[in-house]
Amino acid sequence: MALPTFDEEELLQLLAEFVKLESRFILNSPGYSLYLQPAIIGTSAFRGVHRPSSALLYVIANHTGEFGDKKLGANYAPCIVPQQEAALRGFQQNLRLFGKEDYITEVGTMNLFIAIRDGKNNKELLTAPLDGTILNGVTRSSVLELSRERLVPKGWVVSERKYTMSEFAQAAQRGQLIEVFGTGTAAVICPVRTISYKGMLVDCGLSIGEEAGEITCQMRRWIEDIQYCNIEHEWGYLA
Image (cartoon, rainbow, N blue to C red; front, side, top):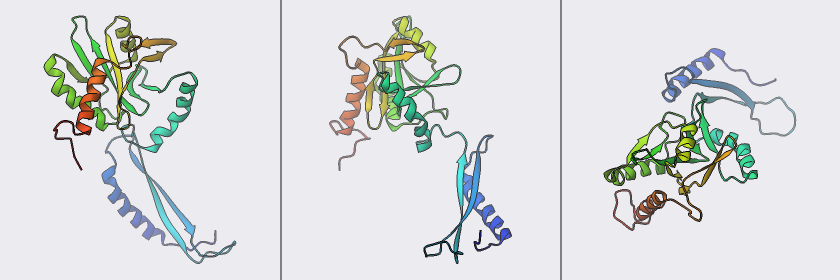
């Protein structure tokens, strides 16, 4: 290769120190590791094909493992083609389901909230738990805190728990699905009208001509009142 040589033992010592430094970012669990890729490139400042007089030796470190709960480009890239396919079928977003159980996780780049009632008319607002498969969204946290502060006193139960798509479809069929909405920094609160699942359209509780449900609208008002400093709140910041 005609590249300058280096001391192999010294490189190993440098790699060992580098690994010690980076180890704080690696979880001590099976499936997590630090993938090291040493590389060397010529850095001589001339054109043409010549023997380089100088070179740069560097290491690329990739943290491998489960990073579904991190806002990484690698988590978004695989979603582009499915999103295009959904758009061709007339849908705006893809709902992400996990495992053979089809656990509901996220919708597009948003967290998802589901409002349901049981046979005794007890109401629950639920969202997927932070188990490493979803983003810990700021708007998600805001909705949970506001819900526990303002909906729980009205008899609501606010939950972070696993919920399957089959349970969702059954709740809709029984008339127990109240409404569904997504949450995100850009969209804030986004209502969901229908979800396609295994060839059937599942209605998400909105009546004809209704753009958003009562809880969806209420939650958006609560958050926007804080954002626009219409009310005094500890989250508000007026510049």
